[in-house]
Length: 626
Image (cartoon, rainbow, N blue to C red):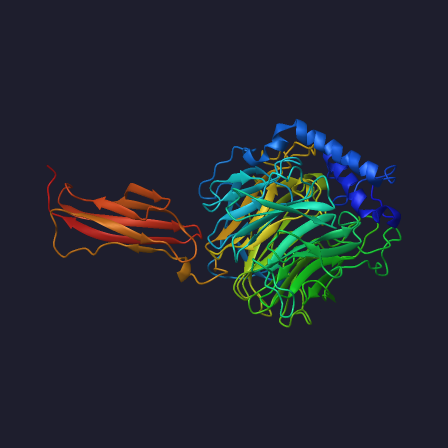
């Protein structure tokens, strides 16, 4: 049962440890709990060093006596998933539409792809290096956290875990694309000092520190320092760690604050003031909730070093802005429908999302009280905002937990979970899906969007049951989206029903909540670069005017500028003779010894961005078969 009095919530450090003990030792949060990380703490208010130490000892004993907790770095996949081209179980072609669900005719609609990681997942996040290596937070269970890595665009995955990350309620991963450094953090036995690590070698080794002064919903991000502020040493980016710092959970948080690192993640210190201080609830909120709350969404840093941190604050979409590395903040309320408190349903805005492009345009998404996603933009650093647009895709009826990223200016990707079941569907039978949406004219007054479900809603629901604006069942409270260097959007989600219509409802400490799945939209308008950048080069030698007795030649392929060749297939007179995968980019075709005649050589190349290139040429031979 929620516990709102300030006298409980103020004990942030000790309370946080007790809460995690409840999570780990009693099996965590069940789907009936309305909040992210809140438990009935009646009778536990005495706290103190003795209670904190007891909680740590209980968790430590479990970790010590269970091999999986100690050997997470060598963890095997939890699920026997095998990937091919990403089409199995995917949602199909995206629909084109504009605000308020108006369908439009638009060419080049992208197609959804789904890749299974094989590892457990809970509130997953994602990062991609500029070379295209994908990292996701992969938490097999409360005591088996880690990071999953794919170097082949989602086909195969490996797992790594920093040794000091022994338990996790909130896993998070972030990739600094400027340097390739991978950061990960987990809430562990000492919530108030979360273990935070980075790797420069793809997860083979990790450097770990602890970030203190925060309690929940931690997020990592970074960027260049602003003019006049302290400069980082030995690393180009200022790294930020922002989270709830007083209270626990989206429903009972009092304050959000940030820490920063000026040495690439080796150490962190609190910034000058909170991004979101304690605030009285607006008129109309129930008496049981006297102070504002909300989650802690990922922030972003623009090219000038300005920090932007979004929040659904008392059900209202807000953006905190700092020009001095978090020493001071300006908070801007966006226009549009708020998500007010509802004393009966305990529903309000939780995660919102913000992105900023290289031209300093801002993009903001949130879910309002009608459970539709709303989108708006700002061209002046957040001072003024365009009219919010309802971007609920046609066919969908409600959504939750949005995230956003931007590629080239005006080109965005948005992810969320939702359902296309009628509102009359009983809650326990409602099927939830993962959505990816994209737009290449997001700065227009009436932009066009493409949206598709990552999964097939009819055969491959990700969750069946209740889904609040804060959490969708066992999928968790947070999902993530990023635009890869290939120009396609990638979203990470949890499949809590990995066996058809059989969902995982257990929340024991060693039970996976579901399998991590990677979604991608391919074949649509690229969000980075041009279509030409995604096209590979396929070269066939010219056909001579006269026949040749000896005919053998090499087909040459060149990788596209954005994306990679997934495979190339060679056909001779309609018969497949060779399939090329991996890094081999040449195919030897030998027509010697064939009967005299005309032979049609055809090569079909398919890229990871969904581009299909076909080249065909006819050749004549003069030699009869011996």
